[in-house]
Image (cartoon, one colour):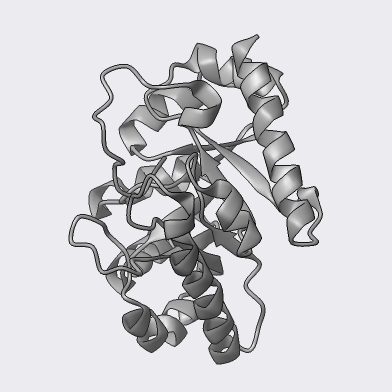
Length: 237
């Protein structure tokens, strides 16, 4: 089975990357990026043992989550519009792409209405790319205490998508900077942040070497998507 073979290869690469930096393979969560893939493919991936799945469009995810095994755990990884927050709060157990105080306030408000708390990651646009969303590092540090004070949000860490490059090593400085920024955030908050979500199909091994606890992998797992555009879209794999 191609999917199982792909998963085995990815897991071996994760284990090797962890070995190079003295980490346990269990310290890295594989998030299967299932955007554009149908429920049948998600069920097949679940049958291979995958539990964590990432989607970047709320409407697409709504249709698929109800048709997928109930034990799966769903993370939202795309740009979240304010008018989609209510559904995102309902369908996802983590939002990895909080990129503004305004959005964070809306999530907290919707969570309060739903009587739940939402774990979130704060998305950082380290390179300042106009085509991508995310906090500038200095803006994040300035707003961090306000973000942390929102009653229905739990800040679990940071997320980034570096500039696309065919060379994985080109991503290393961005991953390293995110790790350093996490340490700065921890100093401000006086508490640890457990997660760094960084690394995708082309560079996840470098991300792991730089401290990633979550890697978002789509193409390397599921294969090329139909009608794909030959460039990496922001916020996802």
